[in-house]
Every structure is written in structure tokens, then in C-alpha cells.
Length: 434
Image (cartoon, rainbow, N blue to C red):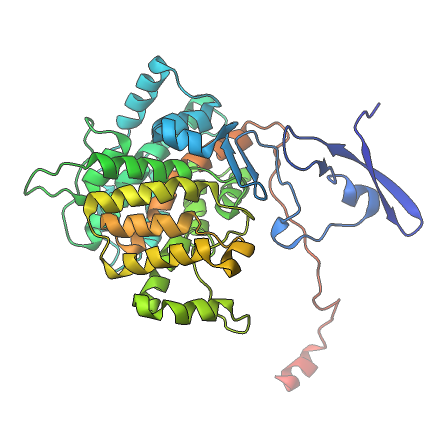
């Protein structure tokens, strides 16, 4: 006997009942999996904005209230009290690690940070001016050619090993992409450094002299990675799940996720912030661009303000605002022209009635772009850093999907509006018409 509450759908004079399921938080869902079988109809939902594609216990978002939680923990608390690898453990296993688990997990990830030596020859096949995301798509997916002992998605041990490898090797690949683009030698991982220290060392060290990673920069990087680690069923995560639903190997799935993340409407938003600041060019031109942003007939938009999910203040931005100030103070570069423009835009957005009423607050992309810029990370690398962080969420979501007994291959439907059945004429008529 069905004990779930029912939603009734009436089509013409016939009624159909569908069960309603409750999550622990968030909107209830109507199970329409039998809709086509029962009614001969599909639903129409462009962008799947009203469709729950899966069950998940990893990340919860309430955009109206400005809430983001990983496994029940608020994002600001995690960013304040945890390091990135502890959050990776939380995403993968559902719990923060104790001291023994933390030591094991950190050591395991550290020992997988090196990549196969032949990967450098693949990178050398790209032009040095290539966008690093193009290289990352190929490099991450190509890992499946090197690590055959973690491709069996039906083996839990191999799934776990693949997850370790993806989290560990993504910073190494990213740093190699950067070094190759500027003509510098690759810097190998250093097992004595933390995850974020190691990445910054691989990015900015050279064989010529010792390079000491600033604790402030490493801590800022750790917070950036934590804040970007997962974000529920966004475009790239959904891409990873959809690719994985076909049984594709995990490295290929992550490569697909990186390709999706590359889009300017998704992972490229913080890059767009810097491009906008360059377009403004000088603090004296800010009023002109503010006026354009308020003009509904002007296509110009202020990048890095407001969020399609968060109708309140982006909870990640609250954390990064403080981090941004710490980084700028450490580096002493507040008089850098683009940063001056950014800080003035922030002040206006937090005080101007137009922005406050519409809740167009600075978002995570606004602050992350400024921090990356201050650290000396090139604009084209911004989305690559996003990919490093989001890999943790991708592998957790992929693992959850594979282990879900209700998982099926993804097969969205469509509303067809093309030509109806047509027929070819005789061969003779076809020749004449040609």
C-alpha cells in the first residue's frame, strides 16, 4: 500500500496520481518517473530548473536564505575551521576525518600527486598559447590511458583509487599547464607541503632559487578550494553524472565536467569579472558603467554581482571578502588600478539603493577574481583553479551516483517541433530537381 502523499494530474477527463517524496530539507518532489508510461506525456522543463535528476546527500543549497552546506555543515564554518583535504574527506565519506583518518587521507592524496612522466609529452603537443582549460580537458581525460588499475567502476576499491588520483593530480596538471604556457620547466610535487602550499609551489617556484609559500596565500587558496568544492547539481556536476551514467570511466567523466565548467556562464564568471574591470579601465569611469548597469536597454552587465541561485548574499562571498582583504594587506597592492576599481565597485554595490533593493551583492566570483589577480595568477587560469576545487565534488557525486541502486543511464526527452513524415520522389524526379 502506497503511504506517500499523492499529486493528482488531470489530462482531459482522466486523472493520474503520482507519489510525493520528502527530503530532509528543501522542496518536496513529485515522482513522475511513470508519467510517460501512464499518460503518454513528457514534461517540458528547459534547463531542468524544476526537475530533480537524482537523490543526493552531499550538498544542500537554499538560495533564498543564502545557505550552502556540505553534508550538513555550513560553508562558512568549514572554511573557517577545516582545511581542503578534510572537506574532501567529508564529501567522499560523509564525515569529517578524525586525527588518524586525517593523517591517512592526507598522506594518501600526497602520494598520488605525481603524474605519469609521459603526460608531459602530451602537453608539449599543444601550442603554448592554448587556453589552459583546453589542455586540462585533454590531460584529465587522458589519465585513463595511464591508470588502468582504477577503471573498473564496479569495483569499490578502484572507484576509491580513481577518486584519490583525480583529487591529487589535478593541481599537478594545472601547474604543468601554466608552466608550459610561460616556457618554464615543470616543478614536481613536494611531499613535505600541504595541498594548497604544494599547488602554489608548483605554480611559482623555479629550479633557480628556493621559493617559500606565504602562509597567508596558502590559507587563502585553501579557503577558495573549500568554497568551490561542490555546489549541488550544477551544469558541470550534472555533466559528470550524465557521462558517468553510461558507464564511462571516471577520468573521462571529469574531463567532461571540465569542458562544461569552461563555459563563461559557469566557471568562467570570475574571469569575466577581470575582463569587466579592464573594460572600465579607471575609477573615474565607474559612474558611467553604474549608469549603464541600471539602464535596462543597455546590454552591459556588472559581472560578479548577484547570483542566479542565491537571492540573498552569496554565503561564499562573506568568507572571501575577509580573505580578500587579508591577501591585499599581505601583498600591499591596494593601489593597483584594477583592484582600486574593484574595491570602489564593492563599496557602491553595498551602499547604492538600486543594488541593495535588488540584492545585487558581490558574489564569490567577484572576490575570487580579485584574489587570484592579486596572487599573480593569470586570468586564463582562473577557471582551472575552479576545476581543481570542484574535482572533489565531482568525484563525490560520481561515486554516489555509481553506488545508487536506482541509477539509470541519463536520457532526457524532447518536445519535437520539426518536420513531420516526408517521402522522397522517384529517382528520375530527384535527378531533374538536382
